[in-house]
Length: 451
Image (cartoon, helix red, strand yellow):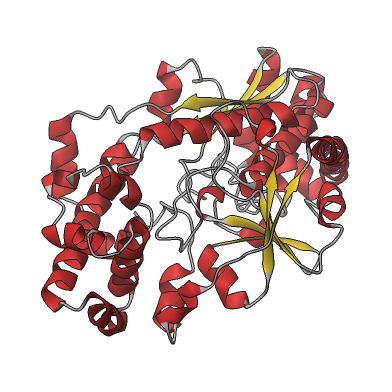
C-alpha cells in the first residue's frame, strides 16, 4: 500500500496534539455579507476570462518546453501532425504548478493515449474526485455544501479543458466520477446531501464552461460492486499497521452527523445510550463529534471532556463507539480502494478510452498525471475537507480549525440564493474574507492560478 495515497491530507491530528486548550472552539464569526446577483455576474465574467488567459499561458509554456531537445526525446513521430499535437497536450502536464508528479510522468505513454484520442475525434479525460464536505464537529467545515474551494478546483479542470481545446481544436470533456456511493459502506455518507453537493458542483461546472460544449461532466462512481465474500476476505487480511496508519484520517472522513442524526448502527454497532444521554442534557451532535474526535486524536484532551460530561463511564462509552467504528471503516475503506478500481467503472460506463487523471499520486502508475486541484500550495488537500479563505491578498484552503488558530477576524461571504437552483443552496459561506480585504472579488477574479 506504500505506492498509494488514499485520502486527502489534513493537519488536524497534529494541531489537536499541540492545542493548549479546548476553549478555542468557542470562537464565532459574526459578520457576514451577501454578494448580489449583479455583482456575481460581473465577477464570473472576469473570472472566466482569467481561466482563458491561464489556458493560453499553459499552452504557450508547453510549446516552449517541447522545443528543448531533452523533452523531445520523450516523444515519438513528432514530424506527424497528430503525434506532435498529442505530445504538445502531454507536455501540459509537465508543468510543476499543475501536476504533482510532473517529474515522474511517462510522457511517451501519455502521448500514445492522447494520439488515439485525437484519432478518434473525441478527447475525454476522467478523474475520480469528491464526496460532500465533512464538518467533523466544525473542525473542517460548516456542513455538506460547496464553497469557493469547489469553484477553484473545477476551474483548474476547466483550464485543462481549454488548454487541450486550444491545441487540438476539438471538443474536450473532463468526466468527474463522484465518490459518494463508492465508499458509503465505510464512511456512511448521507446520500441525499451527497447528491445535493454533486448537483451544486454540476451547476458550477456549467457556469465555468467557456463555450457550453467543452466542459466538466459529473457522473456517479456507482456503488461498490465487489462480491461480499471477496471483500470480507480482503478486509480480514488488511495488515494492522495499515489500519493504524490510516485510522485517524478515516475518523475525520466518516459522516458522523449522518450516523447520529439518523440513528444508524454502523457495521452493526449500536449507538450507545451515552449519546442519547448527552443529547438529552444540552449537548449538540457537533459537541459529541468534537469531543470524540479530539479525545481519540489526543488522549490528553480526555480530562477536559470528562469534566464537562460529568461521568467517565458515559465518556468512555461514547468515545469507544467512535473508535471501534473507525477501525472497521478503515479496513473497509482500504479494501474498497484496492479492489473496486476506477478502471472497472470506466469499462462499464463507456469511458474505457478516456485518459485518466488523479487527485492523489499513484507511484505505480506513472502514466497518470496527478493534479493540484487546490493549486500547488494546496498540496494533497481536497475541497471537500476545506473552506476557502482570503486574506493577505491571497487565497487559502483551510480547515475551520486552522482558521481559528490564525486569530484573525473573518467575515462570512455568501452568494445570493438564486445562484443555485431551488433546493440546492449551499450551507457554507462562499468564502471567508478578512476585514482588511475590501477588493477581494476583484483580486480573486484575476487570481494567479499558475506562475
